Image (cartoon, rainbow, N blue to C red; front, side):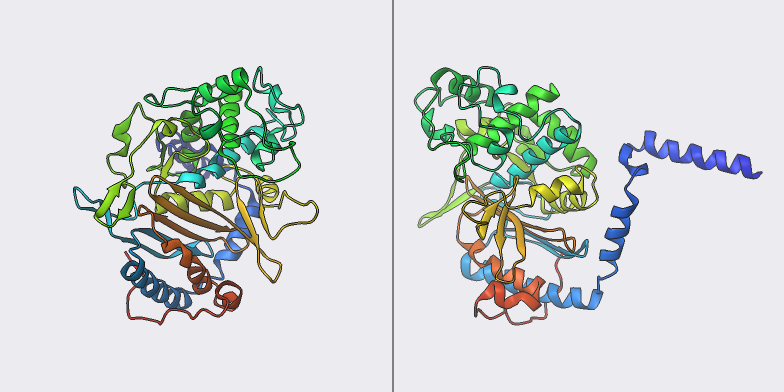
Length: 408
């Protein structure tokens, strides 16, 4: 075979990879500077140190399960590589099905960052601006024209919580929808809680409206949009947005529980589970790691857009050490560094996801037992970053090093 024939053969093979194996289009157009950045970070990975941290993490989570009843799955990564993953406990108390690292959990408010990225994608495509007035994208929106998309993203809109202000206006026997929430806000116009853009008040209404805006602009249902534009390109094959019309999606998922003196009580679904944007995404720790990698590689959104998402948005009268970006909670350590994370709590599920873009590290903890296990997440942080342990622990000791392996 001559050189020309060989070159054509290689090109044909690459084309086949893209078309036959559903390789995302961005596969062939990655930003070389981002690749170099990630390769440089990956070179810092030390298998020996990673194993030492894995042993400490395993000791900690086994102790946590024994002392607090932790029931869930865990994945910890550093320098873009998994150093620990393991499942603890049951997915379903009735069937006695055991959890594994591919078991989907309701992410609760960790879902908000997916809504935020959906908005950022549309911004990058020139279909909206963060400072667009909400009334530009929601016909009949009856509130102050100073309420913008940014106001929603940063929880500064002043709008009341839909779950309370609309409680007596909808049928609780049927799943509520984003469209119904918008319809009722436009029709009833519940009073606002404070003057828009004056203060921060965490409120699920903001992210329901954002999901509705995604639908209006894209022409697709939010569930469909997220699947096509986030889950698929990120390789999150086990993730989905809950749909009351398709309960079969929950077949392999964990069930949420509330511990009672008499045992475990299932926390059932209700009418609020029909809305999307503020919660509703189901994912696994392995898929969340894929999400983490996608964020670091510009697979779903540009790093420049994320830089704004990770910037404290509440700066009056000064930057608060406990802050919020665009879909992410932010907390400043005493050394000036910011933690980028989010928590989630809904129907027995309690979750924590820390995303550290500086060294491509992540802490992903998904639980389906509403207890106080996550109160000890600072110990996990200190194991991952022993040089900053004092900033996290405030005098608390590290768990003793054990003999366990790094997990399954």
